[in-house]
Image (cartoon, rainbow, N blue to C red; front, side):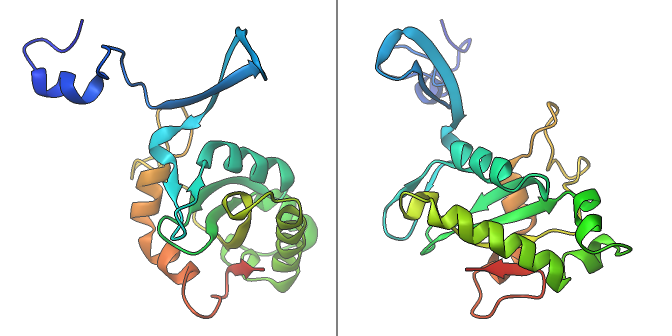
Amino acid sequence: PGYWRRPDLNATAFDEEGFYKIGDALKLAEPGDWTGGFMFDGRVSEDFKLATGTWVSVGPLRIAFVNHFQPLAQDIVIAGESRDDVGGLVFPNFAALAEIAPGLTPAQAVRDERVKAAFRERLASMAAAATGSSTRIARIALMAEPPSIDRGEVTDKGSLNQRLLLANRRSDVDALYGEAPGEYEVRL
C-alpha cells in the first residue's frame, strides 16, 4: 500500500487516488481502442519544454532519430530544455563511418567533413518530415567518446541515462547551443 512509515515518500510516489506514479509514458497499442492495451512511449521524466513552451516527448523522438540515421548513429541524447530548438548528442556507429571516411580515429571521424555532410543530409531530411518544433532536431554534436558505464551514463539495462549524460556533458550541450557550430557539430 506504500512506503513503510514514510508518508513523505508516499506523497511523492503515489497520486491522489493511490496509484503509483511509474514515470513511464504510455500510448494505446491500437489507436482509439482502449481495450487493446498500452505500449511504452518513453519516460515522462525525460520530457521537457522548449523556450516557446512546446513539450518535447524524448522517447519517440529518440527512436525516430535512431531509425532515420541507421546505420550512421547508434543512439542520441535529446537536448534543448528551455532552448529555442531541439538538439542532440549523437553516439555514432564508427564502423559505418569508416565506410564514409576510412582509416580515421573516432576523434578524427566526428570532425571529418564527409561524415558531417552525411549527417547533415539525414538531419535535413528528418527535419523536412517534422510536424513541428518538438519533432525537428536542428543541431547535433557527434560524440567521439562513447557513454561511460563507470560514470553512470549507461543503465544496468544497457540504455542511456538521458539526464546524467546531459549533466556529465554539459559543456558539449552548451557548445552545441553556442553562436558558431563547433568542429564536431552539424546544424541545419
